Length: 566
Image (cartoon, rainbow, N blue to C red; front, side, top):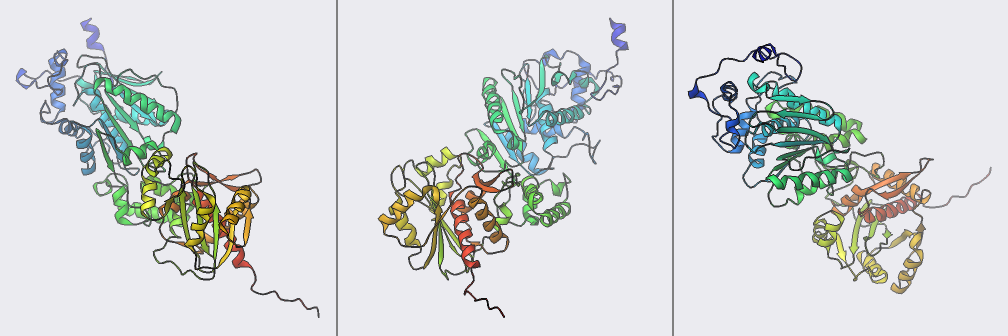
């Protein structure tokens, strides 16, 4: 047996041979890396103990807080790939900040939202490897779950962990077993054995361990909603059995209603949140906001500020999906990456916002979208000859705006709209049509009404309400299908692109346009629709009706000329 052991060739994860181990150090230097946990004595080989101590680069031992031990561990690793391959890891201030918060005694879940290219993979892999080796948690039979969006993304994480592990001392590498099939796993046989790191995909069926000690949810902001929520619940519920920790590391989700966004906006007890997101409404190439979303740039992590500015200018020049993707991934903003069906993109709408509104002159067109008990009722006011646009929304008083916001997945946004004067409440379970129409007309009591345009689907109900309210004005009934709806959407887009819409910054309109998409028929005709079931696009629908009708009115000739035949 001894002869066979002498001939055995130990190899790294990439297949390269590991050099023979040095001789054991004197007993006085036997300082364990993992503290005095219940399985410390199982590392009986002095040679392995010396390798671990040597790797600690100065004696990690049991000194320091878990965060300090984790940072010393990670800075003893070598970068496995990229331009800095072979160099020791240098943690940037924002990475240190996250590790400090994530490994604080009272933290059960840590959330990091940051732009693409800021070392998320390195941070994820370093935490995963440290958790496997027991750098800050020496529980027996540790189970580390790294959940990625897809299996391909999971393989990247696995490769990164294996790359970091290749910089460990040979004595420690011999205690690691790598498996690529049937599952992506790395087993650590030291410290009592039975420790495993498993990589799973959120888009498939995964066999979860019963009680992981650590869970990493990589790119949580971009998981599929249904299976993603199920996997997150399964992982977090299992962590409680062993006092484990969860790390959610991702670029921003596309909207406020995504579960990852709710982790940030409504943090639960025992969570640490670190978000690097610039304020909304800034130019894509704004240097300060680029550094906010990319704090690694000044420290040589990812692209430099000059590179980011160049990419921003390129995205601005190309517009459309390029600009939206840059805002989502590089600026870490909450904008939809799906641009093909958007009624109007964030940047296109922000170009319509202004702090200095044009005057109320030339008459107003009112667009009305009548909702039911659950949806919003909204009115938009458009002055076609000046381009001024205003909008107001109304909900029934029951349930309250805070409860309604929680049910719709927007937290306290409705309350904020009310505080801004953009949202009101009226009625009990439903908004009474006639009293509401009276309030709508009162909003522009001093203005000549050029037209009131409404959905013909609600013609009977609105007609009765107008009669009871004693309102007399030109009425225009429009359909919401591919015929009328498509024309109205195109006219609205054209008015926005041509600078014929000017609106004050409005949370109501931003939210409505953020949820407004266009459905297409086989002939490529479009109509307005919701991006999600609980989305409230009523203000957007009313604005489309008002602007489209206003555009038709403005396009009418001022006088009719008689054709004369010579």
